[in-house]
Structures are given as structure tokens and as C-alpha cells.
Image 1 (cartoon, helix red, strand yellow):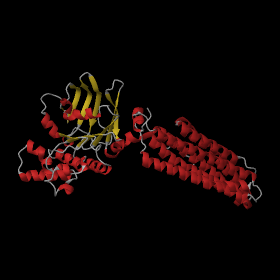
Image 2 (cartoon, rainbow over the protein chains, first blue to last red):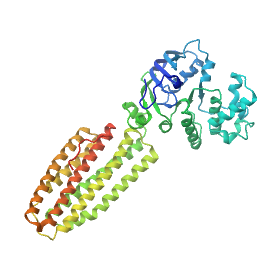
Image 3 (tube, each protein chain N blue to C red):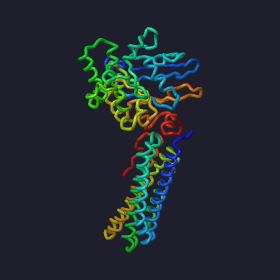
Image 4 (cartoon, rainbow over the protein chains, first blue to last red):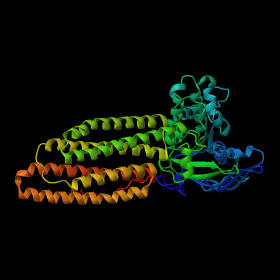
Length: 269
Length: 222
């Protein structure tokens, strides 16, 4: 399925296409996601919105197998990246997570220097010379719009940075391992408004090269940064379903489904 | 559970203000025609003076809408609703100007002998007022069907305009001395025809507000 206004997917230059089809996710006997069919296009920002507990984060974590960490989690149906299933036991989850980076709600820099935070992944995934690591660090920090602010304090502890800078450092750390897809789970909820706007701006610039999927409670943020919006909600049995997805400007001006309308206009939540 | 009760209460307040403004404009049309018909200069002057109040009301509503957009970030149906209110008050304000124009002609022609008993012009005014009232009801009731019906009725006003035009043209051909007076009446007819056209704009906004579709629902001959 493609969405109007977004390029067709599936060609080699369109790497980073995510797809689920009739996907169910269970935590033990509880069904967290029900029958979700959605294609997420590459080089675009897709926002997942919906009320608390509707399975937004669970949906996001399908794509880097983070749900595996939860005992009793089980996935049925299709979860693919570029047409290849990522659900099987043969999948190297470490390699998968190199390709599918994740940014979390709270900035979580490692207790080490700014530089060491950025090159943490490359150091473990490959053998790089110091010069190569320097290059990777600078490139990643520039991409994360942080280089100018930290270039003179690369050796300082990451904890000396502000919250917004720490979050951009975490984004740089993800970029350093060369991902194709970046999952962001409420990446601005712990940040002040200015830091939030900076991250949003960064998302827009990263969308030129990466597939970005963001889970957000902030509908205005979804409206500002995303190209595509998908609305999830809970059914009576508390399992999450996909109600509607489409081009963001259409979802926020004229959604097709009344439940979407009611949610985004604050008539239920 | 409804969450944004305060915001939705404020939207309701805008609706009430819009109805007040609509009522002011209806009165302006009716009274300007009354003034013209009865050669009531005092009433005509009241309409002219009252236009300031209509303009003020428009700015008040516009300000409230801008505040709500800036502070509440309305979405979807709420956003379309506010945008439509902004459009509708512009049309209402212009209809008010047309009524003021008619009142000014009533002042200009008040001392002159009447050209003819006015029949079709009051009918045009009555029709325009009815269409206006129902267009605002359609907006409040989200009634697309009614809005489309009102748009279709614009043809009746256009037909009356044709009729007035032909009649006045005959008068002018017969007696060039009445050119000025006849032309002024033609202006009145034009004011009313334009007012009805603006009502069709309002109706198109009703359709957009409800369906999200921007479409011209029927083109006027003028």
C-alpha cells in the first residue's frame, strides 16, 4: 500500500521501507496489537498517534525486535523491512538494530565522554582507526546538528550537556552506526520547548536520508514534523488497532474516520 | 469523555456571535429596502450608521478566531469550522456594505419623485434575507443539503435582477430624463444580486465545513 504524495516504495533506492500486514502482537494472553496493516515509506517521517495504552510504542518496537525483551511477547503476521521478514529466529538482532536505530523518551547518554558516546557503536561493530572514528564522530554530530555546540568539548562528560543536547547526542550515536531507519519513542517529552523545536527541525533534515518513525503524544508535533500520520486506538478488549493513516495534512484537516476526528479535536481521549 | 470542553464552549460562543452578526445584516437589508420604499431618510441614516457596528462585530469575531487558532491549535472539523467563520464574516460584512449602499441611495433619492412603485426590488430583498438566514442555520446545523438548496435558489434572485434590469431599461429608453433615478435603482438591484451571491459563498463554506471539500456549487450568471 502506498500513500498519495509519497513516492512508490520497493525499489532499491527506496531502502528503508517498513511494512506490517495483519500483524498481531501478544504479551502472554493479552493482545496488544490487532490486525495492523501499514506500509511506512522511506525518507519520510511517519508519526504514530493515539491515546495512552493503544500500542503505539509496542508497534514501534516491532521493527527492531525490542518486544523480544518482554517475556511472553509473541508476534503473528508480517513485519518486513524492504520486503524481508525480520521475525524469524535466523535474524541477527544485533545487525537488525544497527540498521534500525532507536531514540528513547529520556536522553540516555552513556557515562562517558561526548566523543566516546558517539563512537560507542562503531567501536563495537567494526575496526576503525582513530582518524576514522574522528570522521564518524564529526559526521554524526554534524548530522545531529550538535557539532558546533560540542566540537570543543568532545572529551567532556556527556552529562555536562543540556537535556536537548543529550538527546541530539543520542541521535548522533544512532547515526554513527549507519542505520537506514530511526525509531523515535516520544523523543521530546522530556525536553523544553526550544529543545523540542530543535529536535523537530533535525527530524525534518534527517528525513531526507532516513526512514523516521516517531511515536508522540503531542498531536501538534505530529502535525508539524510528519509526512504521514497513523492513528491507533484501543478496542474494547484493550488491544490496539489502526484506525486510519494518510498524508498528515489530510489527517489533521479532514480525517476520514470519525474516531480520528474525535481524537484529534479532543472529543475523546 | 469530551476533553476540550472550554475550547468547544468558545467555539459555541463564536457561533452565537455569528448569528448576532447575521441578524444585524438581515435587519440592514430589510431596513434599507424599507427606507427606499417609504422614502424614510431617518431609517436610511440609521442603516448607514449601523454599518459601523456590523464592521466592529466582524473584527471582534475575527479576533476571537485568530486567538483560538494561536492558542488552541484547532484540528480537523474544528479548524475547518473556524476558517469557515472567518470567511463567512467577510461575506456578511460585505452584504452589510451592500445594504449600506442601498440606504445611501435611499438618501439620494428621498427628495425625488418616485420613479415607480417598487415591487421586484423588495421581493429581491426578501428573498436575499431568507436565503441569508437559512444559510446561517445550515452552517449551525451542518446541513449540506439545505446549503445546496439555497445555492440553487440564487437563480430566482438572478431572474428578478434580469426583470428589474429590463424594466428599468425600458423606462430609460422611453424617458431619458429619468436616467439618473433609474440607474440608482439599478444599483440597488445590483446590491441585492451581489448579496445573494455572497450567501451562496456562505453555503459553499457550509459544504466545506462539513465535508472538507472545496467546490464551487453553482455559478451565478452575474
